Image (cartoon, rainbow, N blue to C red; front, side, top):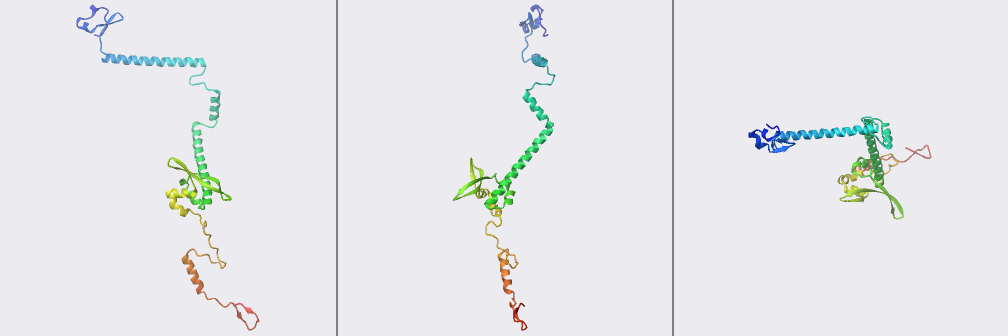
Amino acid sequence: MLKPYDKPEDIPDELKEHYSRREDGKYHADIPNDHPAVKHNATLLSEKQQAEEKARTAEAALESAKASGLPRGHVAVTTADKTFLDTVKSLGSADEIKSKLTKHDELLQESVTRQKVDALKEAAKGAGYDPEKVAALEDRFPIPEFRDVKVGDKTERQTFFKVKDGDKEVERSFAEHLEADPKLKLLSDGLKAQGGGTPFPRQPSGGRAPASDVFTKIRQEEEDKKKVRKPAATLDDRFPRAVSA
């Protein structure tokens, strides 16, 4: 029913009203664009064009490969890239290189952390705090910086921390950082180095250790008072000198 006709008289009378379009010297049926046949024909044309484009691209690539003399699956690289690739290949396979890079990052982080801990210990010691206790709280501190500061006639090595305060970067001393950090502020007294203030009392010559608290001290004093001391010396009639008891 949709075939083209060469002459008008060949068109059946009941179909002539549908054959008003003439192309290539023939009469064709008037089919609307939303007709399934038209849509299907458009799809076929699109697929044909895509296939032809792929064929042209493949043909161009083949001609280019023939002209370059390179085998299929090979590309030309610069001398610098070739040297780089040779160097990388000498390090191992792709998986081995990835493993080495991961290990390198881990070791680098460990080294940075170790250097930070060492610097924190030095800063804590200089500020009168226990280095080991401060190092245990390493995550609460930024990396310390040291600077020689003129104080009167002397030059002192002081510690500073660079930290963010809102949108600005500020410098804080060791004590200022402890005060600004809520957790460190609560622990600041416990972080102080033992013996950093009043020195411990020396042990008396009698061999008794110093009292650890005021109650022990009182007890020791009471014990001393109750001790009965013997006379320092007695006289013996047979000897003209004093003999110890």
